[in-house]
Amino acid sequence: MSQAASYIDSTQDVGPKQNGEQGRYLFTSYVDTFLMGGASILFFFASIILIKQHSHPYFATIVFLLSFLVNFPHFLLSYQLLYIDFRHLIFSKLSFFWAGIIVPGLLIVSLAFSSYFNPIIFLGYFVNALYFFVGWHYIKQIFGTIIVANALQKIFYKKIERRCLQANLYMLWGVSWVWTNVDGGSPQIYEGVIYSGFNFPERYVFYCFGAIITTLVIVIMIHLKKHIKERNKPSLTALIAFIASYFWFVPLFYNPIFFPCIAFFHSLQYLPFVYAVRRNKIRSELVESNPEIQSRIYCIRHYGYLFLSVVLGAILFYFLPKHLDQMKLLHFYSPTIVMFYFAIFLNIHHYFIDNVIWKKNNEQMQKYLFHSILDSSVG
Image 1: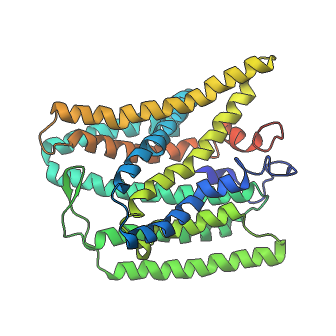
Image 2: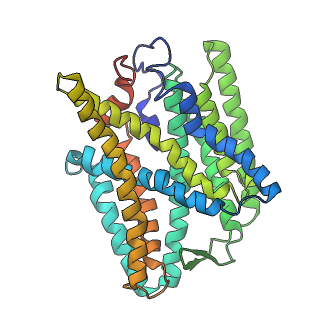
Image 3: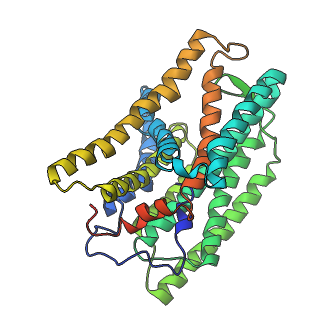
């Protein structure tokens, strides 16, 4: 959902505000707030208690199992959107052709060449690229979540206000990425592949913190000014998503239980948007007049679609690469080299997919995410 914010122009009215909650949220105010950041904040404080009590022997297993319900489906849903829902755009729009054909081809070729020539060095570069794009993608999604949640409440940002908000969020990503590369001389392992960071000077982290504080003050002042002049304030969902971003990225909040769950909460934040788009798309395409048949078709096309993402996500992104590793077909550098390839390809390609399917010029996405949501007939 990295580019959903591109839909909203600061002067654009996305539709008449409905009475009650319907049409102003993807689900309801509480559900939206919980999924888009509230769950991660609650878990952050719960994880502090877990650490103190040392009562987390099965935690890694729980996180692993949750990935089958949220993380893997979130990846597969982006593939379904690109290659199924918007497949007609792949050969008609350059940006979709780039994300759908060129990028995966380049990734496959470059991974193959890297493995052949110097896997120790070049595969390590891919790990650094993964963390670079993943952090960038998370921040863009958070920005989109904030903008969309506010827009549904008729709260819009001018261009300069959006830029200031983006600056603060990108500084969060900056401090997180720089922090992981300060001790770059120490080798680390990702899916059996040894890599090293860029060994940045420690002062870079302090520079980033300075930029975070400065831009945060500006963001607060902008919202105070909007409250005074326009008599509005950010929606609770947007505010919680913004606060959650600090727990996700600022190194001072790091703890060994919460950190592995950030990918889960990012995926959880993504799912409501896909759910809403798919729901509204199907409802707009239903032509059957019989309500019973309508309901049956809707359940098959909507919930079947979501169920398929869980099943295929587990097969394609875990069981298949695990099986190939066990067959030792590519057992030349790491016993989990296939899992490494899948993880690198999936995370980097996912960034480029989201970068096109959630953009303003994708008219179908704009229609199903906003116009249908604001139609009182859509529940």
